[in-house]
Image 1 (cartoon, rainbow, N blue to C red):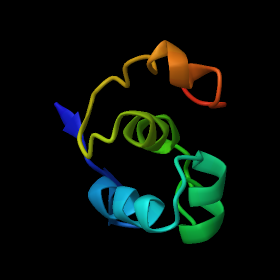
Image 2 (cartoon, one colour):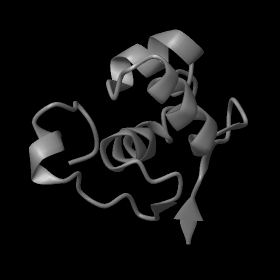
Image 3 (cartoon, helix red, strand yellow):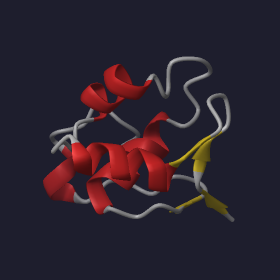
Length: 78
């Protein structure tokens, strides 16, 4: 099973990645401030962090660990 969107905001990870690319960021905090995802239930947070770290718009369930180089930059799901 793959996770590909924020359920609360009904926003696809591909759209989140596009926004991040347009704004030159891979920071979850900047994305969260800019488009208000991950602020209601919080269940998508680790998936969005993984998507930002890897560029993948579909993330396996359960959320895999972030790549080591990115894990230190994120507050996420590791």
